[in-house]
Length: 280
Image: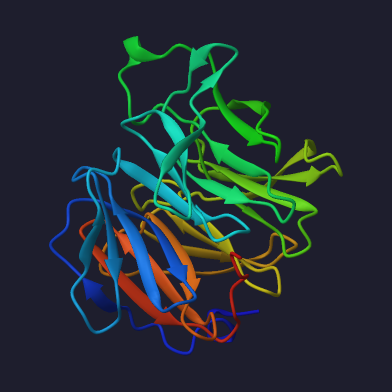
């Protein structure tokens, strides 16, 4: 497989600019995009063809965003050191903020499994070293009943994560080690069989960050200096360099074939040939 099999065109179209540091793109089927500006502590709402408008401010310096199976917003909030959920009436509640009585570091990115389980990464990017209460940078699961479980504790900087289409595999990347690992997902939602999936050796700056999967199981990862794509077996498809180094991405549009990319001070879009996995 080649890049031409994934993208209609390598052209990056800018749809938002003059921001501080964009992250957490998330498409809603009603026809709008949410994304985070972390330093500004704003979640923006963007309708294509219009200027982005503040949707929530302050956002707790929100980073990664997703929907749960009821269409409620799940947000990783750096500043509040928690994962939150926005209820149908607009109330914001805490989903996870502590593990074994100690505060989380700064939840970074998040995905929701079809059974309602919430998986998130917890690197220390949003805090100072002396603020850490946990000795590891973990990957956690919040069960449908609200129990928080530590799944993996041997990452250096866990960041983006994504399920395979059948949810039997969870991909998690490590920014500082510049690789993606794959895990088998047990029926109870825990992880096993950790293995290296891809290494991102490059002279370009940065490391792997946000990650998404299309309906055929191909992996798209914001990586060093570019978007990096892989087949489900780990074979590299190619690297696509844009105007700015990407941080995260999300499929959207009516056909889920528009790839929205948050990249430093801007937000961009590209058209793909294969639809992305639906979020809810």
